[in-house]
Image (cartoon, rainbow, N blue to C red; front, side, top):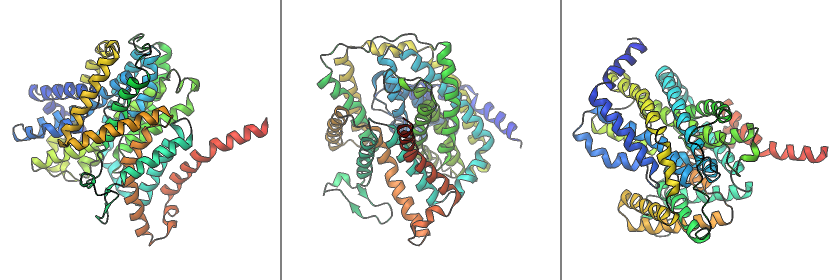
Length: 496
C-alpha cells in the first residue's frame, strides 16, 4: 500500500468523533500539565495508564500522545512567565523567555513559542511520515563511540554557553555528573555513592532535581532576596509579534526544527541536547547578541522551542520502529503498548499498521488543536503575571510538593527536593547555572555506559574514538567549541 494511502487511512481513523475527542482531551490536559510548575507528562501519563484496561489501543495512544506533546507546548508558558520549567526540555526557554517577560515582552515570547512549536511539530511529523524507516536505519548504525562523542558535545556546549563563565558552567556540569552516578552501576549492578541511604539505591529522580532547582529554588530565592522589591513582572506588552519579531523568529524556527529532529530519533538523543545546541547556535548567529542574558532575545526562545518540539515528535521513530524509548514519557508510552500486548519494533508497521498511521495522523490534528488552544489563550496565561508574588510562589511550592510526592509517595523525596531547592538558591546567588546540573544527571550515566562499551569494543584502547568518521567529526566539533572562542579573543588582542 502506498504511504499516502496509509496516511489517509490513518486520518480516517484519527478523524472519528471518539478519537478526535481523545486527541482534544489529551491536548488540553497536556497543556494544563505543562503550564503547572513542577508537573510533567511522564507523571501524568503514568497516573492515567490504568485507562488502558477500559479504552481501545488507538484511542488511548492518541490520548497519551496528546498529553505528551501538549505538555511541551504548555511547558514553555511557565518557563517564560515564572522561570519554572515543568520539563527539562523547556529549561532553555526560561533563559531568554523569562527575561523577555520581565522586560514586558511576555506576549511576544509566548507567541513565538506557540507558533514555533506548531511549525516544528508539523515539519517533524512530515519527516516522521516520509523518512521514519530511513532515519531509524541510520540510528542503528551508530555505535557506542559515536554516542559517547555526541554526549561529550552536549556537555561541552552546555558548560561553554551557559553561566557567567565557562568554569562555573563546567562546575555545575560536574555536580550533575556526580549526582547521576548515585545508585546502581548500569553495567555491573554494583551499588555506589549511596552513603548507606536505601532511598538512593535506585538513583535520584531527574524530575525531583529539576523541580527542586527551578521551581523550589525560584520560589525560595524570590522570598529571600526579592520579596520586598517592587515587582517588574506585571508589564506584559503585546500578545503578538511585530514584523521584526517575525523576521527574527522564522529562521530560528527552521534551524531549531532541523537541529531537534535528528536528536529525537537517536536512542541516546532526547530533547535536552538539541535545545542547548539550538540556543548556542542562535546566540552565535544573532545580530542582537547584546539582548541575550539581559532583556531577552526572541531567537533564544524560538530556536530551542522548535528544537524541543521537533525532538519530541521524532521520538516516535525509535519508539515505533525499534521499540527504543528516548525519553521517560516515551518509555511509559512503550509500557502502554505492552499493556495491550503490542510489541513495538520493526514489525509494528505491519502487525498494527492501523494504530501506527492513526497515531501519526493524530500528530497533524493535534498540532492544529494546540495552536488554536494556545494562541487565543496567550492573554490568559499572561495574566498569571498579575498574581501577587506571595500567592504565586506559594502556589508553585504547593504544585511542586504535590507533583514530587505523587511520583513515589515518599516523604524522603520531599526533604531532598527542598534541600536541592536551597542548593538552587545558593547557585543562583553566586551565578552558577543550574541547567548543566540536569544535563549532567540525564546524560552522565548514559555517557558512562557508552564510554565503557566503546572501550570494550576497542579492547581498552582509547583510539577507538578516532577510528570512525562520525566520532571524529563530533570530537572536532567539541574541540572547536572549546578552542575557537579563545583563539578568536587571542587574535583580537594581538591585532589590537
